[in-house]
Image 1 (spheres, rainbow, N blue to C red):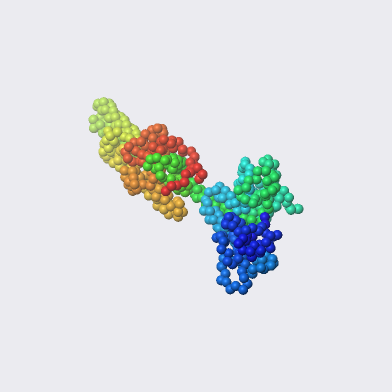
Image 2 (cartoon, rainbow, N blue to C red; image 1 turned 60 degrees about the horizontal axis):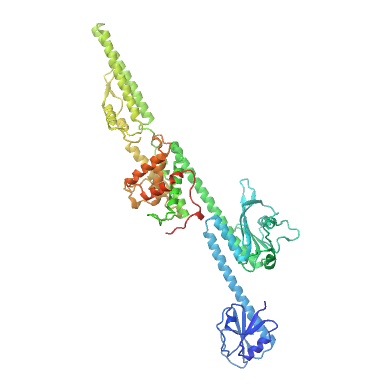
Length: 638
């Protein structure tokens, strides 16, 4: 299409000058409609023209002036040409005007492309989701170059050091792509492999006509299956500042307009053009930014996996001190995140406006996994205590019972000898039988007492009369053969056996409860990143109750983080239903939910959260990680 020159029809001088250029330009009379359509245009006017409409950046004005005139001349005029000048002078002025327009357009385009690259760089650096990152890279590369299709390959390295190309993403505006992630050997046989190995840009005018001697060739399978025609191809390595190629960006079929669709091979032949040097520079710059973004994303993911491994190892180490609760932290984490994901989707009730970001969901998961981290600071004999008395303490009582028995037997034998020495054999048989019966009754009573002690040692709820019997037993003494008084149990042991519920003494309960404080102290020493900085606070509050009866700080409802309220329900449910606790039997899920209902009625746990826990059957989600993927989550509306 020839360039356009318009002239002021009211000026004879402008008309004459315009007609001198009719063989080189599209010449026409000036009108507001023509000037406003954004086509690059040169206007020929006379210095006193009165009908010139407002000009835009796409217009340059060349004024025809009287050589003898002194001005003043308008600053809006690009050039001055004497009235009556010949064609060479007029043509030169017009060519220069068009060159200035092209230079201005080029500057504007470069400014626009620079702005776009900056915007792309900002977006790439901010994107944390690996899949979204790759989508952004390929989409922006195609938009920048008006490419109809494109694909992205990543260089992966196996454990043995072997590298290969992973076909990570494909896009095509003209045909449906049945995308399937595959891997390719990293060799010079493929175009992408060649670029990855050489680190050099490859620009092919026709992908099916590579330069003579080229080691690579295009795989025609896709074109044959879909009827598509791959023509111009621009393949760019994604290289980090350290010179490592971590991927390859392949752009296909450069179009005059990004919105154009190539429905047939004929349309492809008609519209597709080669990629230019400008495209190489643009995509080269974008690929460099993309390489940094992908490298950062990989580093972030590796750090996340490293931290995940640390957390898993920490939980395993904690639970190895108490094998009977193995798996508790993982189950609580899954229940907690499961309930949080339900809360994240509710549209009614007190939590209708609460939304968790992906980072907040991960923060909650880590807090749940580490909620018992402080148990490393609790004495192991307390941590694993299954009965009220430690095994060694019960053994001492049994040994004491044997000593008392032996003392009673020796005392009886001494009484028999004393009787014989004092009275001889007269009526000895009757007296001996009475002593034997008395000894038998004492030994039977002692055995019964020992049985009651063993029964009281179980972490069950004791009747009041049973507790009183244990206390009487501590006050009862047995006289041995030397006249000494011995008791079967000490007052301290009686106090321990009289624990009305569970297996822990008040002091041991305080030690167990201190694990929450230890958890906070340990976790507070970890330099958490900004998104995880509330982990210590969430973990330390999971034993708090809404009515202030919890521990360790006695917080009330409005002081407890909602994440901790969620975790409290999960923790109680798992503790009730777990079948691995030596001090109690597991209860069925329905019974556990009933107990949680009692806690709700007592005002200790959040009623709305418990309703969601039950209605959504969250209690069944203990076997898998239930954090939703980014694309499945609703965005936070804080």
